[in-house]
Length: 195
Ligand code: NAP
Image (tube, rainbow, N blue to C red; front, side, top):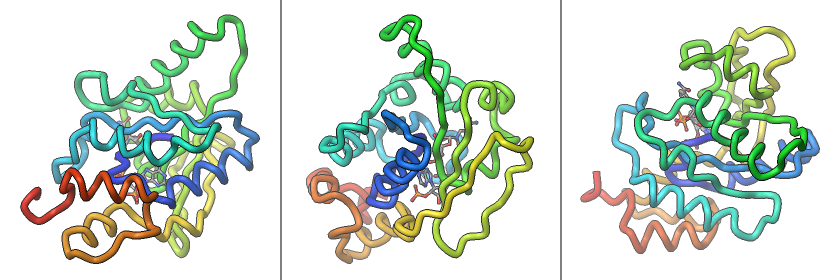
């Protein structure tokens, strides 16, 4: 499951759980992006986004967090994410077959034809785009069968709303896991002076 996770929230966790259930996935590996090259604002340091993702997923045995995108130099390309995860899996589980899915926001996935090596991505994984309620599901224009779009009501929560709430001193309780809220407070993330 790819995302900037700035910060991770309960919508992401519900989406991961729902997709795992629908596709019978054994594991969901969260991959916080490294340098989100397509952003018009500087993202929070990768280490903070990675640690918040670890805190948020710690209690669920199906969930893991990978550093592949955080640790790779240069812009984060999904084809590299999938290649690195698949190479790691092959090293640790030699000869074991695996079916791969790349889960992310449907908005982000709608742009995939403009991403680096979209054919390489499609070759490596089935794509799952999750979206918030009421949002028009956009077909990314890919060949039939390579992408599944799923509406997740809990995605009414959004990272940009959480950042705005912190900036305006509005509560974020119950929108993010308690430990994530504490990390945001401790590191003074998303405050006015941090912008
Ligand atoms: P984004 O533009 O920050 O997010 C677009 C929308 O999708 C937002 O509404 C966001 O909501 C939602 N979203 C993002 N990730 C989500 C997730 N895992 N679950 C549910 N909703 C999600 O997108 P991004 O986070 O930068 O990129 C998403 C993924 O696509 C990352 O893994 C990134 O590396 C990859 N990507 C790859 C390329 C490429 O290969 N060239 C280009 C762009 C993106 P929230 O803000 O609430 O999360």
